Amino acid sequence: MLRMNWRFVFLFAGLVLVQVLILNNMMLGGYANPQLYILFVLMLPVNVPGWLLLASSFVLGLILDAFSDSMAIHAAATVFMAFCRPAMIRFVTGNTVMQGQEVPSFSVFGGFSLILYALALILLHHAVLFFLEIFHFAEFVQTLSRIVISAGLTLVFTIIGFALLERSFSN
Amino acid sequence: MRNLFRFIQRYHFFFLFLVFGTVAMALTASYQSDHRAFFIHSANAVSGKIYQAFDDVTAYLSLKQVNRQLLNDNTRLLNRQRENFVITDTDVFISADSIFQRRFSYMHARVINNSVTRRDNYLTLNKGLNHGVAPDMGVIAANGVVGIVRNVSANFSVAMSVLHSDMLVSVKIKKNDHIGSLHWEGNNYREAHMTYIPPHVELAMGDTIVTSGYSVVFPENILIGTIKDWEIRRGETFFTATIDLALDLNKISYAYIVKNLMQDEQKELELSVTSDI
Image 1 (cartoon, one colour):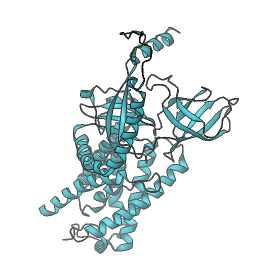
Image 2 (tube, helix red, strand yellow):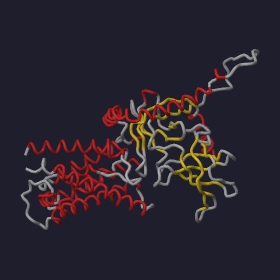
Image 3 (cartoon, rainbow over the protein chains, first blue to last red):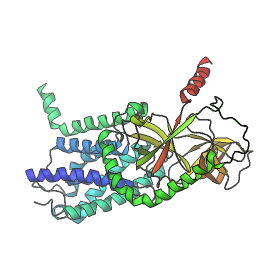
């Protein structure tokens, strides 16, 4: 269990650095950024305590905000996404009783469920993020297209992340 | 009382979500009311250092382009120097003169973080309080306006980019001096819009747009870009022109911070007039 925790600490730091130093400087499709850092929230073990889930999401979001001068909108979006996570896990796994220790992955959830789980949470996260960013509902269509394009990009990166990390995070 | 505790314990996940969510929203709202008091920004010690360290590595990748840019700048400035001109009249005396009082001074800074993809974009510069940077100073590059400094720490500063929804720059059409204001409507980072051009003004494609010098932040005649298209929008009585920005903000690696030495004087004077009315 202890070794497990260290892996998540490294994942946290690694994702922050990759997001801030590489992905935030990427220009894909003109005005869309993949937000890979939320892979951390997606990959926490199924039975992670609620307080730890919310607190780590809040801190993660706030660090991203500090790096990208975006007020506290990443924090708000990530906390909201973390709040929806348990319900989403119950939904995609069809209330199957899980051992609890597992990390969401292809082998534990199955490919379709994992993608559905990731996509739903990514969309929720991006919706909060982009609407908070403009802080009003003007430019609605433009914001909607940003949400969809960015969510698509984030999903691709997240799936690659899941595939690469599958082995090192399975016990 | 015990029931209350049990209730909270039972739904602690929801209550914790409310707490974190409220804190995040309150932080976001507090930024809207007073951005200078806001403490989560990339000019702070940790993120500033990390950006600096990363920039030290990646700076090598753009050296070639930067060198060319600096050579261009240098050549242009050298051409302006007084030594380039032969003094033919030997009877002229040069003395300290109060007629030419310096109004703007410049210092260069490296852009260590930048974005163009968001609706509100910012740049982080590697000059701060220690170098004399203060909020409300302008940031320009060789061929365009970059932004305005907002937050400053000891060694870094964060500037609001021209690509920001709060940014308005006072500009004019170079050929006939008609003024208007420039803002960015999102989408394409190479294009901005100039509004409030009276409908009798004759516009042409390719007309040069420069800063008007009416603001207290930027000097006059800094290049902005050229007119690409114009229209009278529904419900408006003036032209809105689409401007091709001369400066590619996605490629910028060096910028100049402009200090207006008479900014406070002008602001105070202008304020005193409006408060009298």
